[in-house]
Length: 325
Image: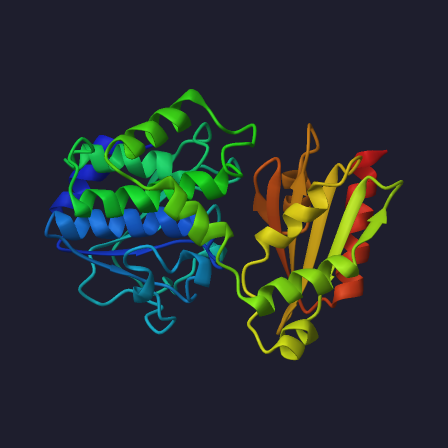
């Protein structure tokens, strides 16, 4: 595996740098990418975001989020390198890189990473990819003791990543390193209250109604150890909204006493997307990987193309039941 010193040198020597992440990017993917984007611009590098996805509304407060329009989906011809963040598999990159002639730098913290880059830096001890990006930015020469607006903007992106990928610092992936980085960001003036309000207290009335509809149909299955939430496309149509990110909805399923696994199945145009969360020692990553997905021990996801809600439900429950026996 490459080291951050080598990667920083290559980045600094590159003329034009594309940055991307996994499809349906979460807070860690977005925060890590925007932190790197803003940092490289501060260093006067020609950097830009490549994204098939539009960044979700609750992350739009981050500087640079509006650069993800969904229109720029491949690297420009004069791009030297593309840095892919928080993405374990080439197929899940939110960019079309099949014809890209430059180098791909793969930076991630997923155990299941395929090492698809010309350069790969995978740190599975990191609670979030943002922890790696923080260290990379220091290698690039950024001073996180500097209390300027530009550094605070970068710090806000990184802190957002830490909050979202650790469940607001309550998951078991949190380490001394996680809190140390968070403390350093807080010291330079990153506003944790502002970040939490934007992430969790900024929902539209329609989104609250969507949560209500989803929870109203929740099921407890497999001896009440599994909570299951289904969200058909019709819910979004009825409420006149894009369903978008549903991580705030699945968390309700895990809050129920006795539940070990929470499952959320969301209908999309070409199939279904499944989110899995777990408590204690249940490993949802194994289930996700068996069905073509990936993620972490306690948080994983799967895209099931061409598979409808009920069929997806049966497939997931079958795999979970094997693990619960």
